[in-house]
Image (cartoon, rainbow over all chains, first blue to last red; front, side, top):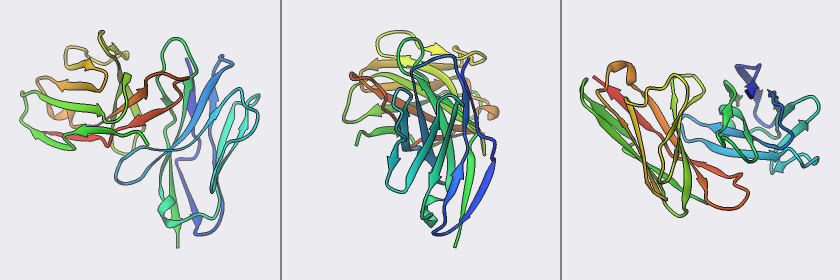
Length: 116
Length: 117
């Protein structure tokens, strides 16, 4: 079974600084998707960024970028120029690309605090 | 972007009664919807996968007779918590997969807080 591990229960960053959230996963599949979701206090799950495993290029969305290391099964999220609105729980998630269950497997989350 | 709506956002029910939560995809068809439960300060726990026109697939340890899931159309899935007890109080959240394409897009509803008193 696939597992997702987020080893940092909590992280903090100063406003305008950069922070990296860690995520590792375990799978025997070669083709899959990886995601970072943000959950603010409102509890709405917001997709931050996604990566397809067959793509070598790291995904980027404005201030958010990932460092995808397929061989190491690592998928870290870098937030640049951190803003107060970035404060939230961040969940790393894995999903098979096709066949079988299409469910998302989530890590336990990292609570990010942004200090003014 | 695609919108998934859950209703009600908050519900309080008496112990022993049943309560229904709806999950609707407002501007797309969803062949598959997922129901999660989230305890305070915890991650999302998948309860079941709901497929339009067929029986839901429940995760291990989830009581199918207690958490009834119906995916009656391509835009609506419902979760009914039957004979609710205080320990069923939780945050329930659904997600929907966009029909067609390579299917790498899943959208989440706003979630529903259930309190059983």
